[in-house]
Image 1 (cartoon, helix red, strand yellow):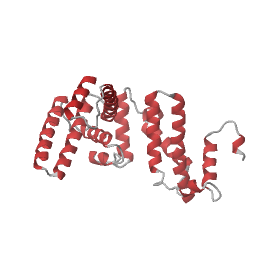
Image 2 (spheres, helix red, strand yellow):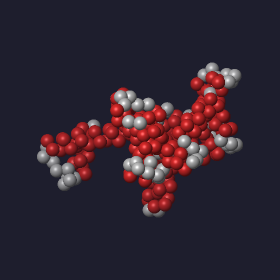
Image 3 (cartoon, rainbow, N blue to C red):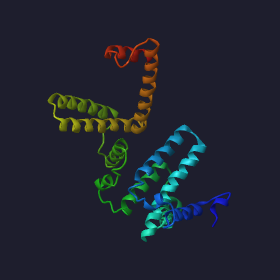
Length: 261
């Protein structure tokens, strides 16, 4: 098939092109890739989709979704060559999962609200994955997730059986407690304790984010952006006043920072 002369391409074309690239006479780079060698590419492409969504750029979103789709096809082709599964098996699996987890659409189960749907989803998920305890559900949360996101998911699963604070005040008090324990660990100078207490503090902050319905990952993302933006303005202000930031004292920098805030 003469692919370069086609005006429009579809999903099947992508599959065939990937087969050609991975073939013995195909692209040397594509042929030598493995799941692990392109693992980071998958992560990066996913984040680029998120960036396109945040920018509300539809053309960029279309392009980045294509890059993610390529990764799905790439990994599927690697397995097809081994004889384990192919892209059709991947599609079959997700279709079956959607049908099973939407019994209110494809069966006679009733779900009038979003909460009903989510409850059914979680119950079915535990059944299909043979999860008998809530800790099994916690273990199923991917360890490859960003830690703030993983923390929120684990906490939500604990909350489903009532292991949770009554309100945000309990969560805030826990943050204060963890700050105190971190300070004590710092005073003792024990690096292992400091790391443990810092982890506890971050985990408790995520708990607060759940109660106030703020995504901790997104909140930290925006905080980073705000910090960079303010730092740029501080540099501009320092330049206007002929202040060399590398040689400036901390009090000078703090004064500039407070001014641009």
